[in-house]
Amino acid sequence: MRKKNCLVLFGSPHKNGFTARVLEKIIGKSKNKVNFLSINAYEQKIHPCIDCKSCNEEITCRYDDFIILKDLLEKSDLIIIASPIYNMGFPSPLKSILDRMQPYFMSKFIRKENVLKKKKAILILTFGSKFNITLDIKRQLEIIFASINTTIIGQIFLENTDKHKVIDKNIEKKIENLAKNFFTV
Image (cartoon, rainbow, N blue to C red; front, side, top):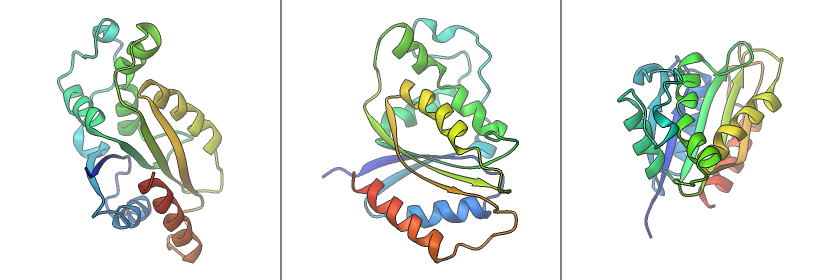
């Protein structure tokens, strides 16, 4: 049986921060079963969408860095978005990557072509405060994920991480359940 490919979109500037530690625990639950393909939004430097209209007729973009994203999206069976939330939204480097899904939006909803195989996704979102806007963030992603033929099947939303920096037993249990459900789908 072929190993599944999981695209990880990592949106934190902190390689060893809370979001990264939660992500590593989830990855650790399935390293032998899944190939992980990662984009670190702060290292990859993906251009933001500028509405150049290159994608109006085909899955392309004027910036060459789209090829990286396109290749990984086409290979992936699963997607993980792991990110802190800043000012009620994704950090701008990750937002740039999400906005670059525009060619798939044009393909699916304008040209009525479904070019990507079905995928499943999970969200790992951390909030420094107790001000939780998960429904707004999830709604935004559901629209983007519809463009890339992806369904969100689980999530971990962790708030107050500026003060609570420990992955306790309650969080461990959430990680365990999420990984078990996600990687056996």
